[in-house]
Picture 1 (cartoon, one colour):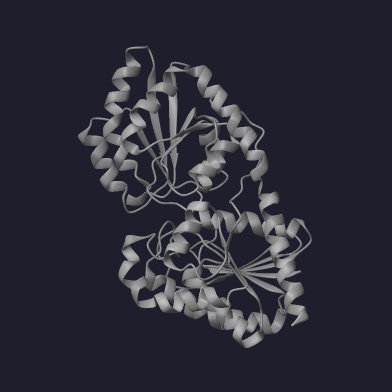
Picture 2: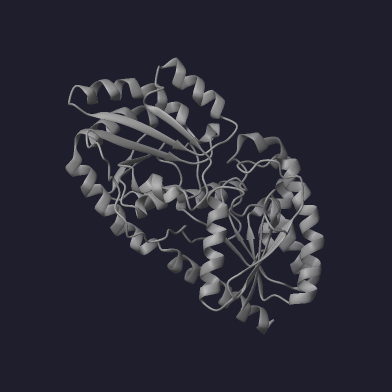
Length: 382
């Protein structure tokens, strides 16, 4: 099968959705399919790259200025350039199916290619492409709402990665079937929590530093955690891995609450650098307000970490005896509990590794391939 993937984010650009795109492409390739990815160029990256035997990446020069976040104006610039490029690419390659990451901004490309070339397309929602997910795009989505519904209507399949995201999509438009295929994770063999000083328990947060991720909601609680843990001879450190426009505000909160010796900002790290942080941590905290299905939580689970996360989209699928789903106001209590109870940390960590076995990227890719096969058969019969 010849698969065209269109995504305005692909590593090192973007976050969880970009990583999902990368992993799925690798799994499609490993299964013998030919994959072509049209994405955005970023400084230092090759405009065209050939990976393995059958993955080609085309990076289009558009007005993307930041790795971690994209404005609507930048999305539009990518969209306009990608329409012309994918038109030429389809004439040359004759694809069997197009997978769209995400409904906005890439959805119109799928719609265009289907109308002109009868190329079927599947939209993989990421969260921010669904009206109501990102407050910064509220006014824009009101204007383009009818166009979004048209793109959904003409798609051959709509896919959400969690029940919560599916519900959010149905809240916007419930006329079209939306199936669920979760995000995945690599199955890691290494253990977590290998610390030279066992009196220090390492908390880890990995993600873009934007307001929606909620780190500001738990930082003011840390002095209470520190005090309770110190009384039992335990110390904590919170490692924050990631970067973004909200970092200065978070740094100010750290100074205000005198957490400079507790909270460490490590900045943006590439995929090859992240394993060190996961494997040297003891507890993963994720206070996000809205998600699709957070890849970083899946990654943390693959390293055998217990999880404390908010009841955001994806939490009910991920947390089943391997951590806590808790409103941010209750994080201090749960953090303290796990810091002081090493046996519970180990138990939750083992359950995380068990849970992740069913959520491998290979299984996720196979679920998509089944959808693609069905669509291609139906298209051939038309």
